[in-house]
Length: 429
Image 1 (cartoon, helix red, strand yellow):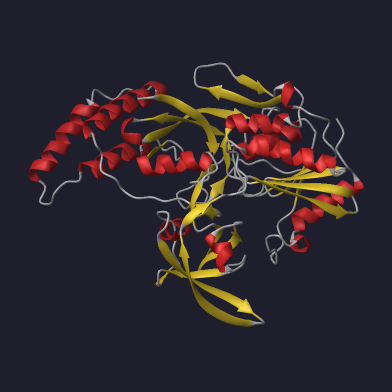
Image 2 (cartoon, rainbow, N blue to C red; image 1 turned 90 degrees about the vertical axis):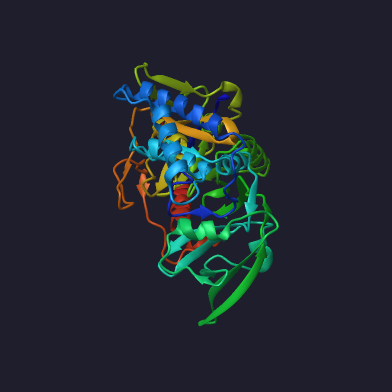
C-alpha cells in the first residue's frame, strides 16, 4: 500500500442529476492478483479498526482464498480472478452501508486522478436525466460535441443506435464514454421552428478541457458585476479563481456572483484555498474524526488579497461537499448572501488510499461541519431520494422551467442575485 494520496470532498460519481461523460472505463487483467488479495487484508483490518467491530473470528484473507480456490477447482465455467477480487472488495465495502466508502479499479482510479488534475477524455458535455433519454445541459468548449453543433437542450434518444429511453443516466454515460480516438454515434432530437427533428452525430472521443473557472462581466443595475462559475474543486481551482478575480477587479468589478451550482466538490485543500480568497484567516470548516477532538481548519492569510465586494453565491441541489464548505463558510461569516436551492448535503470526508496494481480505496474517515457547527450531511434512500441535510440558502428560489444554459434572461436564480446586489449589497457583519 503506497499510503494516503489526498483527502477528497466530492460526490461527482454519485450525483444522479448531472454528469460529464468525459471519462473512459474498461476492465484490465491484474499483473499480480495475490498482491491485491494481500491489500484486501490490510483494507479489512483498517475498516475493522475504524469501526471498532470485531471480525467475529473470521480469517478474512484465508476465507477468501479458500473460496476462490474452490471456485477455480469446481465451478462449471472458467473463473476470472480479477473480476471476482474486485467484486469481493466492493462487496466488503458495501457491507458498511456507506456509499462513499468504495473501491476503484485501476481504470476508475486513473480516471479520477485525471479528473482531479482537470484532464478529461470523452465527447464533452454535461447531461440531465430525462424519461426519454438524456438532455444535453451544456456542450463543453472545444469539445467534439461543440464542434459537431450539439446544443444545450438537445435530447439524446439513442447511443450507437440503441434507444436509451427509460435508462438510468449512469448507464447512458457508460455507453457514451470510452477510449480516446474511438467513435460513438449520438441520436439527437431537437425542436427547430416548432418541428421535431432527429439527427445522428458521429463523434470521436477526445481529450476535453473542462474549464474549472469561467468568468465575465455583467452590466446590471447593481453596477459592474463580476460573474465567476466554478465547476470543480480540482487542483486548478484556487489559482484559476484568483486569476479570474484579478482580471475582474482590473476591469472595475463592483459586485460579485460566485456560481457553485452543479459543482460536485473535489479537494479539501482547494475548498480552503478558495474560501481563503474571501476570508482573511477565518475558520472554513470543522472536521471530526472518530475518537479524536474536533479540528477547525482556517484560511491562510496569504491567500486573502482584498476585501470582497458585495457578493452572492449561487447553489442548487447538485452543489455538494467542497461547494457546501465554501458556501457554508461565506454564509456563516456573513461575507455573501446564498441564493438558490438547498444543496446536496454531503458532510463526510473521504481519504483516498493507493492499492497495489493501480487500484484505490476511498474510505470515509470524518464528518465536517460549517464554522457555526451546522451539520449538513443528508442520506440517500434505496429509492435514490435524498432526505435531510443540505445547506439552506438565505434566499430560496427554484430555477426557471424555461432556463437554457448561458441565457441569463432565463436564469431566475442569477436574476435574483442581481436584484439582491442592486438593493442590498453585502450583508452586514
